[in-house]
Amino acid sequence: MAGGVPGAGKSTLLRRIEHDIPGLTVLDPERRAERLAAALPPGLPYRWYRPLVHLMHTLDVVRTLLAGPHRSEGPVAVHDTATRRRRRDWTARLARRRGWTPVLVFLDVPRDVARAGQHARGRVVNESSFARHWHRWTALRPHLTREDDAPAGGPWDHVVVTTRDDAKSRVFGLLTQDGTDRCALGGGSPCAQ
Image (tube, rainbow, N blue to C red):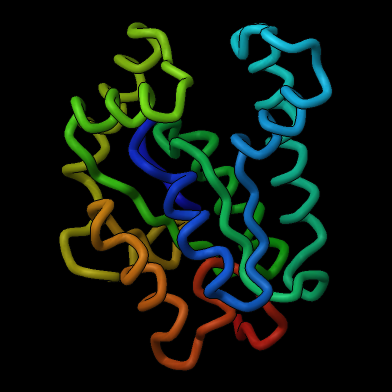
């Protein structure tokens, strides 16, 4: 799972790794939003169909995780803020029960960088919603592992906190460590549990 506050760079990271990792399936609500925007009347504000985007994304994630890794050509990368504990842990537990190896990669960026990222993509989260995400993230950050790629305990095999600049290489490192290259982000039949 690629986590981070809105504007941290999750979609950018997923675009950067998508074509370099064989069989990678990317589940990103931004892609859902683009497809819906193309099908809806031009100029319709995103806020009007945002709930539908998030519902469809959640259904994509659940369907893919329930299918299990034997139905996938490779790993699956899920875009989620991961600032909501219940949702974050529920996703990891569902993934594990279905045979995936769940890994959480958090993009850690300063608040002003995240806000600039939202403006750059043209979808700005309202201040109160962003404040809630930011508050949850700053409360969570000190409890995450401080060792690089260390086992995280709980429902995740690994939790990695990284910068935007290092994110791509960190993900590749996870996908190639100890011969687990198709497993680290949760995929592929070679995964051993």
